[in-house]
Length: 222
Image 1 (cartoon, rainbow, N blue to C red):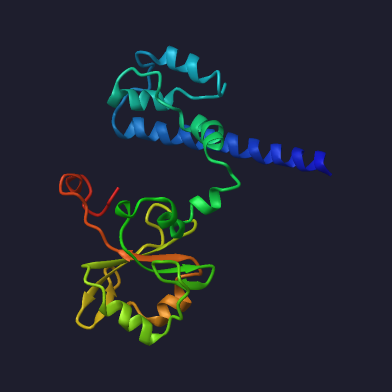
Image 2 (tube, rainbow, N blue to C red; image 1 turned 60 degrees about the vertical axis):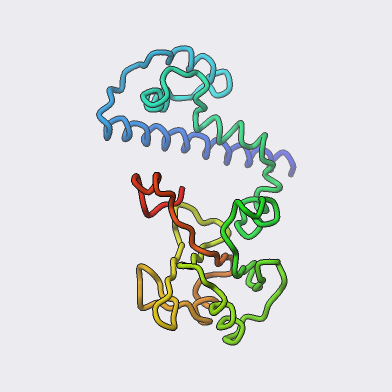
């Protein structure tokens, strides 16, 4: 059985491996086309290929041709495929990744001043306050919590599996209610928190984009 398990794991790995290579190549061809860059060898490309194909013999030169336009000839540009399949697994144990990828755990491992203020957590269906103490979420508790918030906005986002803004809701105060910035008919209330947002999410203070970075994309904080 162990041999069969290892065989299946290898099949899964190589399916993911080849699919990722195809996805990355498609992405970088699109980037080259979008920005009008020629898909031709760039200075230093041969040295870059020679270095990184020792780690992954199927590395494509396309991403080097993209990034070298911005940072010049640099053989230390890490290919995404190599990073994803060979470097990250060595630096980040797969056994602990569920813990460290849960946004509700960030307050446990990162300095406080790195993170927005947390108001409420939901972890596997159980509600906690910012200090990880279990709370009973009812209308009385929620009203008291919302009345104590003086921030301009509240952000609620999935704490597990969310990325690229998917599932993120931003609420702002309107009269006596906190309403969804993009869908004003949706109000921040007990029904939303208990029935519509899933079992794992975090409610935090909204933060403002830095004035300089906002010139590129004012809707993002990355």
